[in-house]
Length: 317
Image 1 (cartoon, one colour):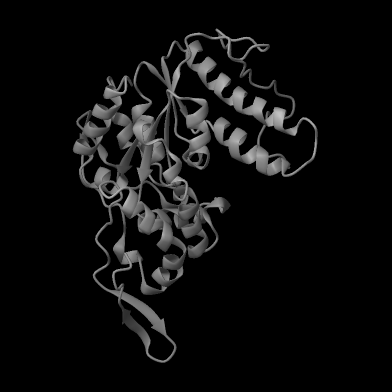
Image 2 (cartoon, rainbow, N blue to C red):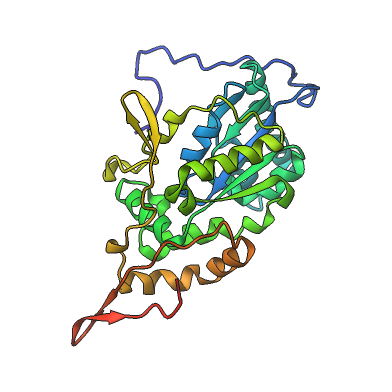
């Protein structure tokens, strides 16, 4: 059974786009390419929320989770493996060129000077994307493992197997993404705390806008309505958002980035060994952007004889 596609007897939708300024023979033939903004991080770290907001500028084409760069840099090489074909490497390199060519051409067709890609997994190839695109900018969304893992568990409940089948596997999704954080080009990367965004969205977003404008990104005319849209997994239903509609306007509010009442000592014992090293690296590398929510006031673990007993974090938070 196919997962998607036109119904039998229906004409397929025409998704052809005209990409001006390029030719198939010479993908680099354009002399006025759109620049790229990549909003990346672990899945469920606010990349979609912030990316859709920043991508709402009238001068920017919001690609959403485009996926082209992730496909070209990570998925395709992994799928092909070590196949010893003579043209494997030229093909893969051409795929990378096409991912950039398509994004830039699509932006040009919309008369946009920038495009915004919110695919979180671009973080795995950020060093290669940065090398290929020396004028690209990067927003690194940093979210503490606790809130991320909780959200990933809800994603798994909604049918997203990639989010991990266990607490430990969800923790590995977080760790895998942030192991690559150190590869981002420092001068072209702004690390943004999801915890700070939730606690003080107005101040946090203003700092983001200022940094982008200093780097020639058109951070004006942004749609605050994007901040009132919940991107929570379907099984979880709509969740609080930093933007709320009040009498037709958007007001910003503080929300929680973590649910301490749903974190136990047993969960922590499963998650901590997976995240410990990456957590320490992020804290050292981004001391002002990787923030920790307040830990649960008290944790409990199951004891075979005594039942529930209190557990100590001992600084492991």
